[in-house]
Length: 199
Image (cartoon, rainbow, N blue to C red; front, side, top):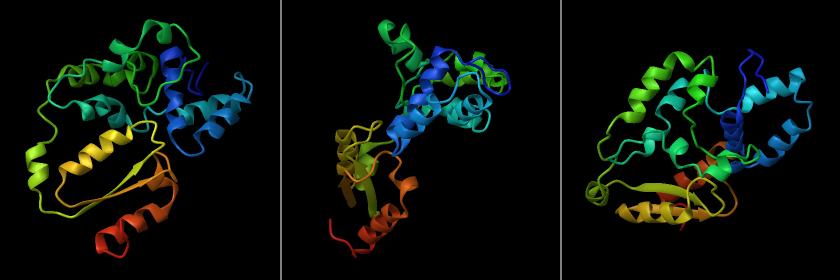
């Protein structure tokens, strides 16, 4: 498969299209892409638009794994930990997994390859302190989604419990992209903070 600029989309890069499956409407979006002839301009342009890591948001690609690195170096965790049976089967999709090969395949990211290597091998400090979070005297409202493909509900609830005054709204009405999907999500969170909505 090729993007409009001629980049060859290999199995690892293609797999990243699976990121849409964690968002409302993502399955339909993927289905619509796959209905196109893979050699058609429509397919190539739609595919390029769906690839989550690229030249439009280079910092997202460079920093993606490191934003989860709580006191460790990621060293391309997605590429290192992918089971061989998944890696060898190009029909499996991934969520927010960033493959190392992407910085070779993407002509837009290739110039950033060295920077990406430095970031991937950086030993990061602890992202947050549970003690500091527990002592923070700031009201917080948060949404957690039962159907979140990227963040298990358990992790959201555990994090919310670290905060002294977190008003957590757990819902099955939305997926990971709830805030982008519907302005009522933000309205509800603001209402929780103002005490206009009870938990």
